[in-house]
Image (tube, rainbow, N blue to C red; front, side, top):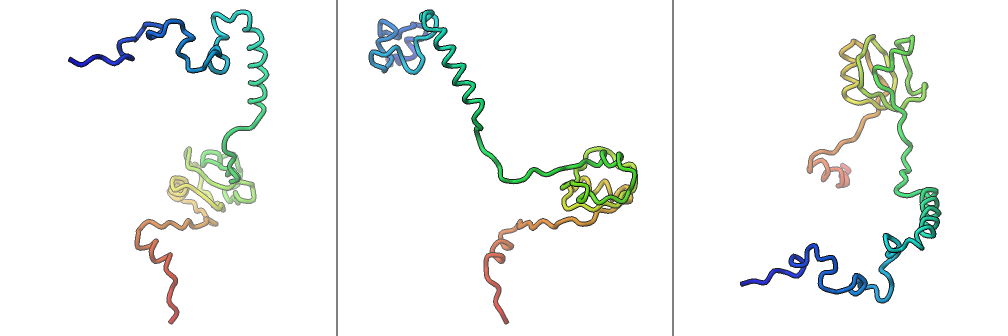
Length: 157
């Protein structure tokens, strides 16, 4: 007959067979680790912890955390926003837009100049009888052979 593990036998026993709560913390004679002991039984200390923690929280909030991208975010415009312009011949690049996106309906026949556009936006503009020019071509390598041929130097004849 196998004996059940101690952790499963001691579920709900509060001290797990070690007597007082402080006896098996692994933190020596300290109350615990960090701010342990400042809870229900530490009423005399609570206000001091509140002050310290609020100061730390303010400091952490003021410091910038995480990853900062060096890429400039694109200024985008959707097809449904083209209706606010009176003209149908638009140079969106000169107007400060980087990319045309496809949300909404195309009402008029537009002649647009922009460097980037989604496939959906291109299809919607063409379906309405318009045209988009000035698009930059993306270089896509999809097959293994294409990757291998790109890496090899071409032989001169």
